[in-house]
Length: 119
Length: 109
Image 1 (cartoon, rainbow over the protein chains, first blue to last red):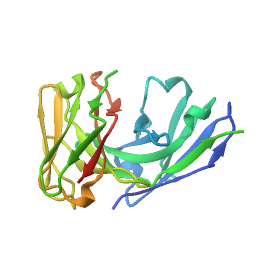
Image 2: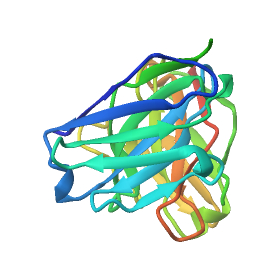
Image 3: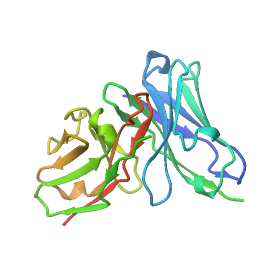
Image 4: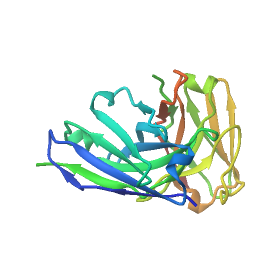
């Protein structure tokens, strides 16, 4: 059973960089799969941020592309999200998830972590 | 990029059948996946591909697709099915970009 766990600061100041890590257990990242980040502002819907393949190939939401970096560390079996120049609009629950390209869907999700952007 | 459109809210009487729809150009090329999200919880994949359920998902959940519209059907809705439902697919660009629908809040009466 694949398990994912997000970690990182719950409070980030405006204009700074949001950094989150997703630790994966029960599966080796280097074995395959795409790994993604999705966010959900309070009371709103899901928004795909981006995905990364175990080889390092990345795919970003065009609306966030200029501010997003997703990377993978196969030695630690984890992947990370950096979102720069944050504003209050980036306040959301951030989820990491595994994207099954055969299913064309996100089959395993982390529990999510709330990140608030505020001074 | 692509967009997926869902009705904001749908209701169903207990034990009846309900269909939740998702429209978008990308659905002409790709299947939709469907997720159930209950308050305070992460989304759960309930349908993927043509009409496949992950292990543990009740068989009252089914999926279908026609043209630019994908549908999630719950046959014999239960009280525990009350939740938000999101569709998701790859976008029309053909790469691994992904898009979510705006979500449908299902109320079981």
